[in-house]
Length: 223
Image (cartoon, rainbow, N blue to C red; front, side, top):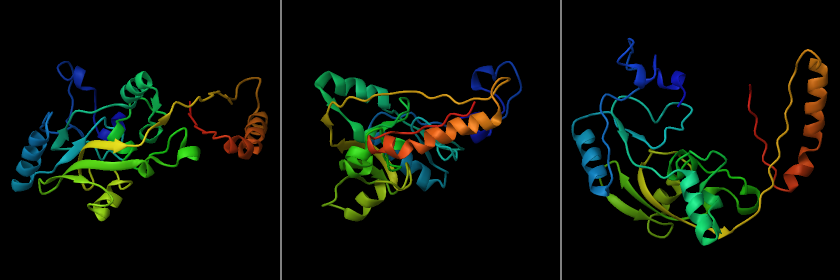
């Protein structure tokens, strides 16, 4: 998370050298590695009226994954999953977007999940077969469309830590698929007028429908 979204005044590493405020950082952190530890933390927070925030990698633009009482658990990042999938010859397109450091089962998959191959395989939520989750009451359950259609529907797209803490996901994979990546840069400068900039950008957008037919993903980085 960027500092403004966490409300922090400085990075933690500098806390011993300069004056800092807590900002959006949690007062206490629980580092867990098992389902039982997650259940203990959830039950403790509920029984003592503590604010509980589930944090994976912290990719949440509204800062929902940070705050007092944050619960910091282990995670699997997209790049780790893709590296492992490549070893066995599969592409888990359903569980990773462009950001390699985004958590697999956090904001990406539970938020709907748009990937480079969504135009071919649809969103990640349609690839999920089952989830294991700890609910707010501390119950641990395996959720599928057959066992609990309401919770299964809610977990796929409502956002991370909204209905529970997902500990594992079973998702469809596909044969490895080649992807072509290109970069277009549009900028202004002493020799580039604003009109020339927008003419170039407009030309790119004119061709975008044809690009989209081939699965083009358009990402804007402002610098």
